[in-house]
Image (cartoon, rainbow, N blue to C red; front, side, top):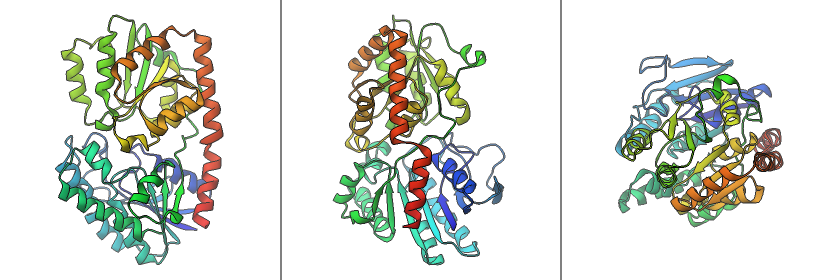
Length: 399
């Protein structure tokens, strides 16, 4: 089976699509990828890439077709919109030049949904079935995370989204609650399939190295990993730590994002610089060592209905590494933490509640923390096992 993968993001950008593509390649599928020039999350080209090069390369013997796009920069709003549209524009011309035939077109859409247009065009060109993996619910995610409240713009995005959903053959959703939202958009639920994230196989319990441990300060260390943006409500963490700044509790931050600099300024203003340790971005493969060195792992989301429908991608990684979790989020993410008994959780943006849970976690004996971690690992193995989900994915493609 020959599959064309269309995604605005791909390696060296750190997205789930990377592992899915490489795993399918190992299963001897014939894969090609149409993607953009990597610039996430910093908003500037990754090392070795520019407007001029490369337009084509091989990664793990997989042909990668790179379309130009306008950089997302550090801003939101109009810059992000131009970034999204530019990939569709330049990707269209890249698509026209693609030769040969494909049996399936698979579109990866963590954001933006506009990438779906390329999938529709490709499916028509190659006369094959299209599959769209939906990670964000538009236009609601644009309104909440992007700060766009213009009714006309939101209405246009809603119509665009409905068109993409209608013209795509199969819609994969990362959370079962997405079906409820899609039903409101008049989507035929018969073509909607629940397909959650899985964590790459290197996410597992490990023993941390001294090199990593030495980067951590004395005290109870809570680690936050991933994007620092509007959706993650990093302010909730900062304000919670401000309430308990006399405690010997530290926040270790691994990641980057549009909200990082503003968050660091707020931390400095509140006199909390000694409580937050920004260790930068690291390859995904090294993350388990950092997780192992932490006492607990932290996940937060903005308070909005749209995020209550979402299973945050990092949650599977946290569970897979067998560490206790502290959460401030609503909906299905909170339900998973509670159902798995893998840690402590409060509602999204509950600053006081989060501060209390952090103190409570700090007082729990190490043996009980280990139980939290083992519970999470068991839940992960039962619900988000990679091999099972890869087999499910193959069945979906063959269906």
